[in-house]
Amino acid sequence: MLNLYTALQTLAFTVSDRIKREEKGASAVEYALLVAGIAAVLVIAIGAFGDKLSGLFASINISGTKS
Image 1 (cartoon, helix red, strand yellow):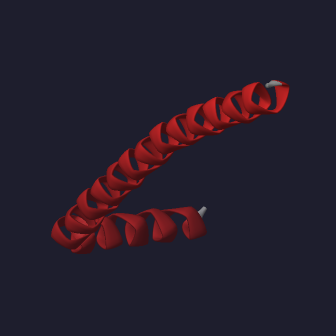
Image 2 (image 1 turned 180 degrees about the horizontal axis):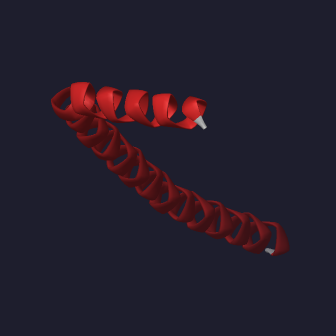
């Protein structure tokens, strides 16, 4: 009888741990989607404003070397 109780308790703890791990996995997917979204926004912004930013950094570099 003690072996049955131990086996059921082990099963309950195993199922509980698996459920907790699945929730962590879901949050990892959510974080990955968030990072992918931020990366996409950065790529679009750099594509749209890349030439202007390049000119800005070039003028800063030129200003810094004169003094």
